[in-house]
Amino acid sequence: MSGQRILIVPGWRNAEPGHWQSLWEARLPGAHRVAQGDWLFPRRQAWVDRLADAILASRGERVVLVAHSLGCITVAHLPPEAAARVSAALLVAPADPERRAQLADFAPVPHRRLPYRSTLVASSNDPYCPVRLAGAYARAWGSDFVRLENAGHINVAAGFGEWPSGLQWLARLGVDMDPAEWLRRAA
Image 1: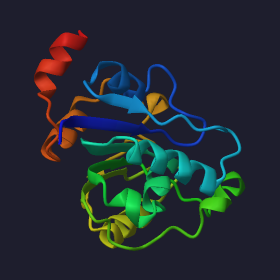
Image 2: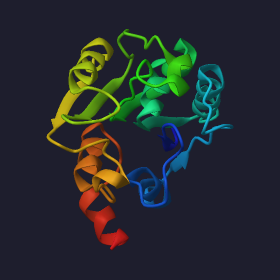
Image 3: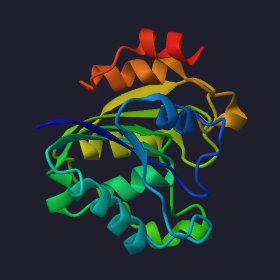
């Protein structure tokens, strides 16, 4: 493989400029956002197809996914040929598509093991997905599970900007980066 491509996979309504995903996209080498055609009225097949196309276009590169909220569920729906090209994933604050009518097309959520290493980070008080459901996703997907206390939806509204500990979890997945150096350059 010739390098590493980090695909940023935002959730419903995209990630605003101060969101950790946006900051990482702008500063991490090899990072690219997967842009969806419709951020407000998501359709599962369209979102999965966009992500699969981005993965398959990364020929010769190691693909790492960094997903948030509905982006995590999009990752879980990937077809086998795209999932086989992924080497690792950081899955943060997954959504529960059965709790919101706008996201119902993403239900049911697949409960099969992901064919790559992954870490799922969830909050004890996420308003969009109960932590026990996030834990069930982690078990079904074979992901390491990290539970944060009272971290909301792990987004800007919950006080997450640069999110250094998230970078550390990304580095533990084998991503070629030094979190401390990245934060020094970002300052």
